[in-house]
Image 1 (cartoon, rainbow, N blue to C red):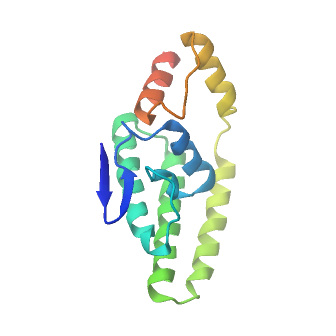
Image 2 (image 1 turned 30 degrees about the vertical axis):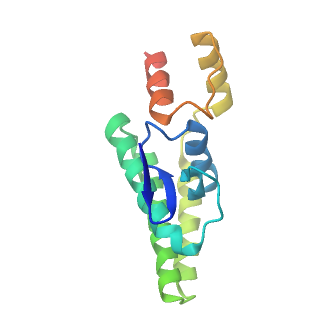
Length: 153
C-alpha cells in the first residue's frame, strides 16, 4: 500500500518497501529512501518522513520483533529526528548541542551491537540456499525477512 501525504508519495507498508531502501535508511539515516520517486526533499518534509518511518518501523517490530539493541538504536534515531525538528521549527541553533550529544550516543550504541556478519555474505548464503538470486531492490522487506527467518529454522 502506498500513501500520499501532502505532496510526498511514500511507502506506507513493509509489504511494499523494497529491502534495498530499508537497508539504505539504516546505513545512511536518510529517510528520503521512503519516497516512491526520488525527489529533492525540503526540511519542511522531514516531519512527514519521520512519521512514515515510525509507522514502517512499528509494523516491522509488530511482525518480526527485535532485540533490545536494535530498539535502543531506533529510539536514539527517533530522538535525533525530534531534536532536528525542534531546531527547524524554532530556528534556534542551541539544539545542535543536543543533536551532537545524541549522535555521539548513537555511534556508541552502534559499536556495542553484536556483529552478525556482513549483509552481502548473508544474502549470498540465502541465494545459494533458495537456488536463485534474491533481488533486494524488488523484494519487499516483509518477504525478505520472512524468508531469512524461515531459512534460519
